[in-house]
Image: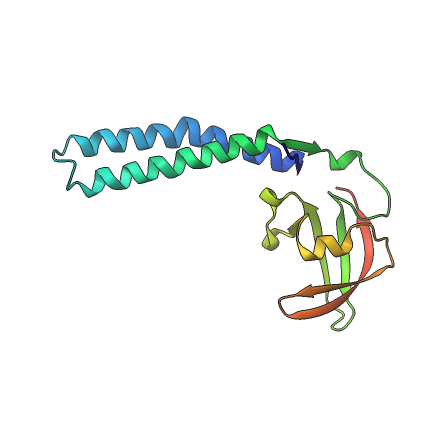
Length: 157
């Protein structure tokens, strides 16, 4: 069984979502199914079929979350240090063509959120950065084509 690298914050977020789905969503959906059943003929009852579909999706997500949490390898970034980029690092980069600066934290697949500055360990950017140091230049193939970045700083938050 393959371990899934995850930050402490990412693990907490998945646990909270699991708890919400098990304790809140599951009960809400059960109530919606019961209400729809009370309306009579189930074969033509759109509310009933919609609620059953929600139940199926919720139970599928619960199973997915339980699987991820059981395989989680929690990495406490606050206990890491050094100037070599690895999982959990927050990296400041400058685009060598546009001089535009950016900041990315390398996290697990389930906690990646580009808008929040968190990229997946399996992304092309992360794969290019892993093992590099402050001052190194990396080339990354992006949807916009090949781009070169210089690593300005590696931090552990």
